[in-house]
Amino acid sequence: MLQVIQNVFAIEENGSTLTLHTRAKADIAIILAILKRHDPLRILRYEPPSPDVLSYTGFWKDPTYADVVDGIMCVTGLRSLSDRPNLANLWTDDSIWTHVFKWLEYMSTPNREFEPAEVDLADRDFFLHHFACPSIDAIVFSLIDLATDSFEPILLLPEVGAASFFIRLWLYWPGLCLTADGAEHENSGKLLISILEAIQTCLAPYMVEATREIVMRNMLSTVANRPDRIFRIIAGHIDHLLALTPRSASEQEIWSLHVQLVSMLADLPALRPKGGYPRRIVRSLLAALHAGLVPLRGAYIAESACNLLQKFLESSTDAHLVTTAIRHGIFPDLCIMSTAPGGEAVVRPTLVLVAGALTTPTALRGFHNTLSMRRMPQLQYTRQDKDTILSCEQRLALITKWQTEWADLQTCGRRECPDPDSTDMRACICGEVLYCSVECQRAHWVDGGHRRTCNRDTKVHGVLSAKAFSFLVAIARVNLEGAYKEIIQRLGDTLQGEDSISVALDLTYGHARWSNRAQAFPGFDFATCRTFLVNVAFRQGGRRCTRPMLFFPDWSAGHANLNMAYRSLSQSWFKTDDTLMEESLTRRERLFGRPEGVPKGPRRE
Image (tube, rainbow, N blue to C red; front, side, top):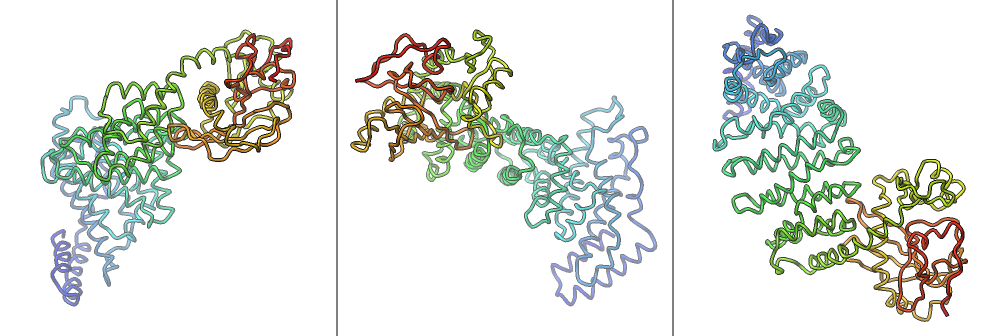
């Protein structure tokens, strides 16, 4: 019967349309006669054998396995023929797909429950490589070779489980699929290619929304509704691809299909982990990026890994992924790629994103360590990269001073705190105020006025911690002290004695950038000259965020006219050359004042 079906396909390739219709009808009549006299698909309607009756390896030793494979191929062949004009009567019932995929699940699950412990694993792997993989490859290819109108109804049948079959093969069979034909064989990895094409077909935009929903639902159920597990498994796939010898003839095709599929999955909101993408995916892509720089591997690996890294880093809502990439040496690798023809345009967006993440001590130390271990000629750095390195060195010098400052700030933000010596701190969701207990936080929210000044937004993910925000304030303060005279000079005669100044500081490019516009406006509800409202733009993961910070000159510390009911960590102090300071105040007292009242300090003439 299979020979008859193959003859019909041969007619399509070699015969004219008239000959095709004439001879096809005769051959189909023969097929129908065979189906009436003897059902070649009868074996598919039997249940797969249980392990206590026939082991998995015993199934492949039994000649019956060939009848099962032939029956499945016969089903796909008939379904394909039924799409041709005047041949629709070949296919009348979709119920056979339930039996087909039941057998496929059996054939693709070597670790059967109750499998005898004495089964030789080497013997089992032999049958997997030489019988299971070639058979499943032919079946998968024949399924995805069906027309969309024929393939899609199979996916839409929930009792069939077609989508879960393809997903399980893709998630848990990559190593076996790649090595089934030998690393140097010309057909090496063809089963994985068929599986990758099948998954992409299932998620393709031309499929109806119901089909994609079923596929994604099956994908999530396969990993117990943990999307992060999908990307951990993908990271393992990448590691396995990199472990192959670069002599594989299909390496580039496999890598290209894999990258397309991962990019497609990263664009699906339903598959984005709530806690963020796992760091392992970044480490695996960085290994691919580094491997792509080796002459033995193709440059397409490095470029595609860079594009995927950019996608994952941009979609992250916290700094964990970017910090992991920095600590594992993404910056030197990107700088090497930028020296290749056309490489600058590929890596520059990722370099900007990495440079903008250098606002935490962890990221700065990781950046410094990777540069120390992998020294590169200065010629390989562009001007922007040199600015990033210089900014990193300047901020590293700030960490020691900030650590002392942060220790002084770790006291409860509620003035009436019953335990002011407590060091067990919690931060408000805005990241600006610390509390020793829930009771103090609730009291300060109502009585202390934090409800009026808190800029928290429960819809925004990845809120900065108070510690991270405090270091960001320290970076902004250092830049404000350096640009103080220039900003005052820029305003010129428009600045009045009691005006406050609004400026914007952009840290998203690594080095600090002040906006070209500085605005003077009447002061807040307190009268103090030269109060700065600095809107600081920074990167939190891939997101660009802006936070307002208030800065007063040091000489204003302790003045009665600054006796506000609420102070936040961003209401910091900065030094200028011509200021008098109240030396008796600690850093904490400069921000929050003394509980017993702060004496009036010297005023500037």
